[in-house]
Structures are given as structure tokens and as C-alpha cells.
Length: 244
Image (cartoon, rainbow, N blue to C red; front, side, top):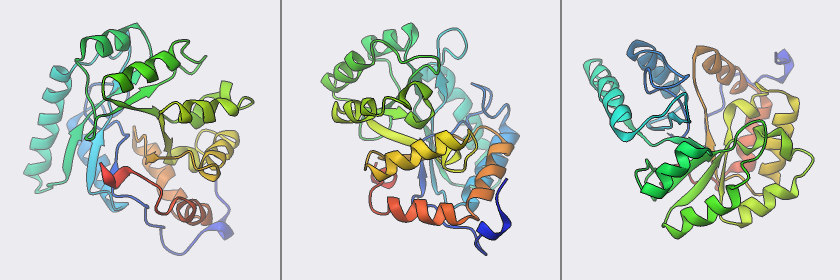
């Protein structure tokens, strides 16, 4: 997957120690299926220098209609298992809200899960942009919340309409790019767009978006590359991960 001659001798250290986007809360979405897997994934993250995890389980209509109650129970089971292994990593959760009718109802009711600093993560559908995204960004800000758009580099309908990125960011949405995108895990175009967003100063957060061991392996490989060193140098001093 990577050219041998493009590797550094030792892994590049992440430019942040707080991961705000990962799916390690067990059994609640398409990420880790159980507590034992979650513990092992978190240990892999700690090898990258992660000391604080604010996990982001999916909230989507008809598939993962998670609430604070369902997620708190799963997180408590994981925290208990970690402590039994004398692993005291800082672990909490918010949620990754797919923009649909279910999330809109949550936003209207105020029963939402946020990050410290009142950041709230939103996700576009992958087929087409949510037609109400502009209004949602505005309404969330009126409620005192700062929307964080998850992995904008993965929405292919923006690739030939890059002015849209600038308009969304100027409207108040922060951008979170995936480590996996920078690793080329989704394809060359996604990586190129991620680099474009970095170059234009539009990247506010980096997240692993870790779901499974395959993802962990891909990130391990990426951290051995010159690409990682160059990407992180370009992001130096610009990320908000460790400021929330």
C-alpha cells in the first residue's frame, strides 16, 4: 500500500493527544462490537500518543438511534473494563449526528450529546448534501453550540464544488478531517481533498474515525510515512483537539 522508500524509520507522533472522532464505545454502532475489542483498540490508540478520547458513536435514523442513556451504559461498561486493567485513560463520549429527521428532533428538543466547549458533531449523508445543512448550522449556533462537520473530505459531491467548503466554514462550521483520509484509506481523491483543506486553513480538528483493527493497521502504516510527517508539519499549531 505504501512505497518502502517513503517510510521513516520510526512512527511520526500525532500532532494532538485528544481524539474527538472514533467508534470505540462497544456495541452501539458499526464500530467496536464488544468491550474486549474496545479495550484493545484503545491500547492501539495509546501507542499513537492518545491520552484522551471523546468517542463519537453514530446517531442515525433507523439504524443507530442512540440516546444519552444507551451510550452512557455502554461507556460505563468500557470504563470499568479499562480500570480492571489499570488503564486510566480519559474516556468520555459525544455523538456523530447524521443530518436526518432523528437528529433534527434531538436538536429541537435539546437532548443532545456534545463535546466540552459546546461543540456538536454533524455528518452529511454520503449520497447528497443535507438540504437543510445551512439552516442547521445557523440554528445550532443560535442555541450556543458550535457545529463540527465530520470528515468533509469524504463527501464526493463537494469535490468539484470546493467553494462550498469555504462557504460552510465561513458560516461557522468547524471541519474535522480523518487520519484515515490522510492515510489514503478511502482513495487518492479523498486524500487530495484533505490536503486541499489543510492548505486552505480549513481544518480545525483531526480525528481517527477508528472503527476496527483494519483501520488501526492503516493508521500504523501511515505514521511510518513521509506523508504523515509533512501533513503534521502543515497542521502544527492549528488544531483545536487539545484545547477543548
